[in-house]
Image 1 (tube, chains in turn blue, orange):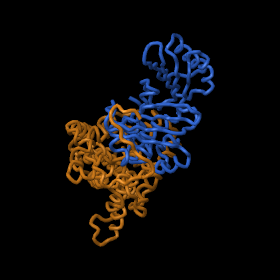
Image 2 (image 1 turned 90 degrees about the horizontal axis):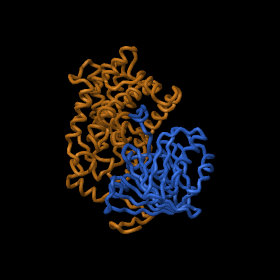
Image 3 (image 1 turned 45 degrees about the vertical axis):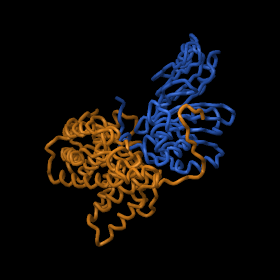
Image 4 (image 1 turned 180 degrees about the vertical axis):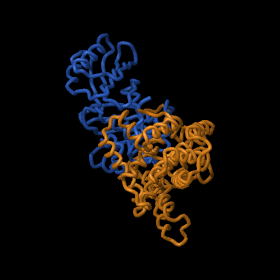
Length: 222
Length: 307
């Protein structure tokens, strides 16, 4: 069991009204924003399950938009995120899907288009108490929480790629807390997700890119 | 250094000759990543947010996002000055504060979840009202927060603080037990008295269901928080008087959890039972009071259709 701090009990400090439907929504969208290489130009959120039914009274829509704008869960600007998105030129659409069944009741899909034309699709679930998981990136099922520094590598599923990644991490003396490979089918697109207790240096990215089967890197620092 | 039960906590307190707050501070220093100065800083920030969220709505009422509540804290506060005020002093103030925090929470303001957002009014309501009326310092209040944190930690660890898992008894009931124990220490009671008070508080709210109207953290959550506060003030008074709980805290926590597992899903935050399932509750659920933003269009999609 992880250490429960007194500030996990008397806390978190958060914008209400709901840890799962508001604070969790901010966290998921903030993670998606951190995965983008450039500023976000437009975003489509699709809400499922309990999110789809109760988003308005819980401010889930404002919270998601606030996360894309870069706000943390205790940022009072979340309440005004519609207006602030408009001012920032961020275009957004909400799709309320009450029909499709998902594995978890609090699920959101985020289709993001960045200013440089980069596209990213992320699925997040809010699992309770403000804790979240990213469970899909660009149609591939993954799993990470964003509670650690996280390196995400998009690669072709070929021998030696994971060895290359761990060698680079070792060169930079990064201690791996968790590491997993996610793929759809053998030899096709895959993601390696590495989570570390300490910050992962940005300079490691160039070295990892040196492998021809590594296509893209995302780094989320805590 | 750690403790896994109320019994172990009390033994540690007695062995070291320290109050619960100090043992909890030591535990945080041993197991957590914070320095003593960072702990103080974070406690100061918690107090600041609690004060702002308890006091703000007394003069600046705000309508909730779901539109079911707003302005109740001011009504109760203003009534405190009326000759028809029934509760008086501490209780009048404490219930107004607890309603205020829920109003801030429901209108997307900043609160401290203690232990949850839905029960966030109980600890600040009880602690701030008693501190103000008794002239207690911020130092004493921060000890109260650490003490409440110890009780909340034990309930998170050994029972539940989730309405979806164990009903409102796990949220407002837990918050009430936390506030009780904190008040007992703040008023000079022993660790043993704190745990007796917390056990009494849990037992008084045993079985309380979670039935949010329209699935929102608004009603009956807001008035339930006032019950949590009143129960805390009452149980602290009992414990400080020397009244004891026949059932020890650890057994009461387990009983609360067991009752939670017996509650049907309808009464665990699904908005399908209790007040939420009444004809009026259902009518409110259909969106009669929800405001429209008018800024953008929401699209409704059918199964299998691509965006």
